[in-house]
Image (cartoon, rainbow, N blue to C red):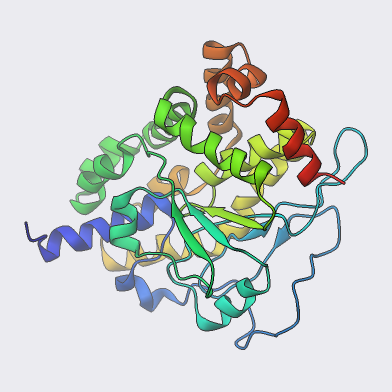
Length: 313
């Protein structure tokens, strides 16, 4: 069945709002960039100073980071250059591909669902990097918001997103990370892949903040990083996405799509209560995070030990 232009435009808008991509029709608001140089250097990848979130500046993505460098409870450090987290890779420039080619990646795990890939496009990856689709559901949020934002009706948008409802949607999404068996399988497969792999791995969703944020929180806790530090890495998405997300809200205002684009701020941000919703669900179902990891994800002691040996040194 042919998708109408109106429906496609609305879908692009919703994808951008919920998941962070800047749609083509808002290009007048400014390029998606994060301070990357116009021409990429050909120097090999060198991580930033230890102890900080390792942001990798790119022109077509704003939230790509090295997970390494954090201190564990025992004073060791998570190794640099082993695991990278990111947002959508579909708009990468040739210069960005040159930057990513220095990371030594052989696979890039994509947590996006088919509807996101349809509207935002497939990954652009350096030669030799194999895309691996591992979709994690958004709990129907994309479809529900298609009606609200695509309507361009401020009353309907307020009814669906105002009064704390957008934040409630996000908490429900996080609960599905724990409650949905298919989601558990995808997170477990990714952690097992890291444990058994030898090449650096990158995983991403669209905004690089929710599914990617939860996966990274789990990884850091599994290898002995304190909760406070893992939460700090999770919240850092707000820093790296802030300028991009503000431009998007202004574009929606100027285009007349939303009278009050601040309604989408809860969808654009990560918040500790979102993470808390997933952790509460883990406690309710499995008695806590450890039970979720071992019983819910099925990670045995040998896998956890391999993960720590690979990631910490």
